[in-house]
Figure 1 (cartoon, rainbow, N blue to C red):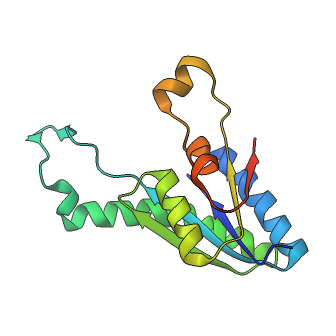
Figure 2: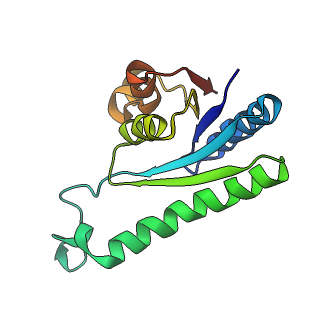
Length: 148
């Protein structure tokens, strides 16, 4: 059925439910798994106590900080995959919006299913916070399994 599953994680507790569903599906189908987390771009206008942080996103500290954050998400996911008897490949996408990074990674990996979660926000909170899940559903060329 599925040969390659991409599981998208954002570090939230809800994303862990998506991870467990994705790993169980991979185990049942014998699919390969890629686990992805996306570090969104540094927001223009962010600043620190010293003033505007222009150029921070080009600094080695920025990359190190983003990579450490990604590894804090990916390492436990790989451990969960190993415990489930599923081999998983970690993937970290830097400086992309989540939906774009997930869709591009699915293309690069040749995924035939994306597993991700949705917080199910409605009304004004959805308008203000947006929905990366909706973006993936709208623009993905492969099926998307949404866990809530």
